[in-house]
Image (tube, rainbow, N blue to C red; front, top):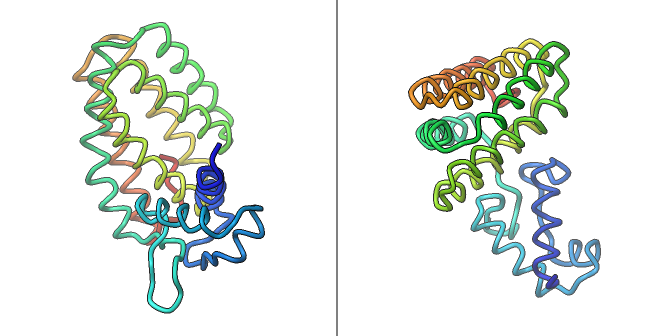
Length: 212
């Protein structure tokens, strides 16, 4: 792996996982020492992070980790809702019933004893299953970009067990509809989940918990 790719991957993970908080300065010298690479690949990594929307260039401070605001959440869902509902609909047409039936069962089990790490790992597997079923590189690429920012919101969250249980039940219904090969039901179930997720975040007055 090239030094710039390694630096980018490490910094991207640090931002997504919250180890580099919103507003944190990204100093070339500090990061090059920490990552064990020269300043040139770190500078290239910063440029890629800016292109991803994970960092911004600011006068006098250089690159800093981008902020997350309620306005960002609204804009994110404006794009997320049509893309993910379309993905669910297409997965119902093209996906394996067995794969989504198993996922539905797992969401049912996860909802009985909500655990954030289990829930989000299962949600990531569902996303991957939908992507594989749809088989549309353009759709998957756009969703992958959105999911990065969703993870950032989750990392800032105070996970609420009640919302996690509700979210697991909503995911289960999406998987059931996909397994049944019902595009309209899958799209409706995905829409319901996403609307409820957005309503929950908005009700908090800040991106405190998404269980998305």
